[in-house]
Length: 585
Figure 1: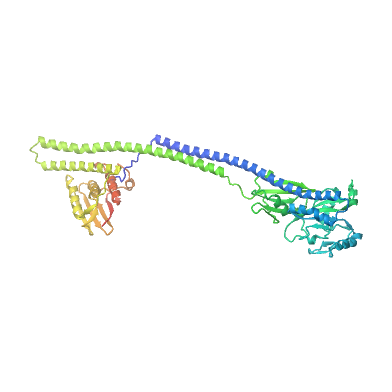
Figure 2: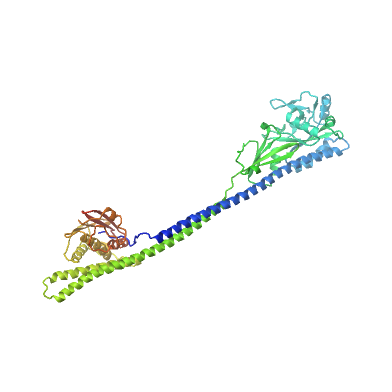
């Protein structure tokens, strides 16, 4: 009793189809694998390029810092040459005039100073001389434990800051004894003994009010040209020194370099607790005194992450790290493009396979349709021919009425089959028309049930009940005839020798339902699950004739009428099909 709701044919998957599907899977795996390999190759190329770029940038940063420090130390050498060629001791005015141009040219300079060696016996006379020169409050000072400036304690000699430019902002450094601080004293002694420029470790500048580190560069000056360390210690006259802030030197040297690389600057010549000089943030292009304690893996290339700067007898280490991890855009693009191409190829192959499968299914469906049609048409034609031959050869036949009924029923069955085929053909080609009109539904259904009863050799019993206001409904009569004819004919065919079929019509405000109920052989749950397969018939239909197209016709008509079909059935107890159509006033 099972008919199909769709014309799609489900057949066993042949080996050729499985082979084509294997090709699609192989293409998918091959394309994905090639995309991954290409992505890995591009990623490696990107990493190599980034390494080269990183190396070039870190080399540029280190070179810029080294050149900047060298330029600042060269200032002291120029000032030392000025002192050397002067026939008379350089006066304060001459010192101030000489350094003005340098101060305007190099904004990273905090101060340039001259600090002579003053022995303890000469201290009072020295202080009085400077006071007479216009600095009445001048005295040799040092820092106390709380950080304030006090008069320097007695010691064998002093090296006080005497000449100072610019004075504004650096007043506190005037008179400060450089030997009173261990960091400065160590640098002074290294410069004195070597006769070369020496850098101090990090210091807090006397004139510094902000939280920044500074460093001093000392150039020793002697009375004559000593040739040994002992002679240098005996002939030292004083020191020219430059006062620099770490942040000033670094920021000024990197102003023209816009690299996305951070770094930490440390003095390897100092003790571990005094090594940190500053942290440079590429995003802000500033140096801070907050030690970031960079992780060991924060730099992508260990061998390129540290550069050493050597100057003034000290070693400064620059530890680089990228501010942001590089995004492998090329590799990601390669992967996306590869996957898209693979997806496109697989989709094309899948569509081609689907078209081939559909073509094969249609071919198989046509073969089955032709076979079914020839069988279903040959049987009623044979019945009609035999009945007509009986009437011709035996004119005394007493059962003439029974023969006429058989011919009529057979012709009706042929007509129904042809109508079903025509309906499916029009639905498949999109030419099935929806032409609703106003019907008196009780009269229409009564006439329809009589026609169905008349199409069987022995008129079956079909009970019609109507509820609700069904006198005027807007329905396509041709589509409704095709729907009810197939459902009622199936109900009669699969109800045995004494069919008991009921058609109940119910009209509601927004819908109309047609319920076709029989007490026939029923449909198994397994067969109910296959209602959507074309040409499929229930396993319990036996020798009952049928085409398997009834529900296909019903479904095609319901789609145009925007209706629905539900089924409930139990084996041996019967089946109920319910059709629901929207009601339009």
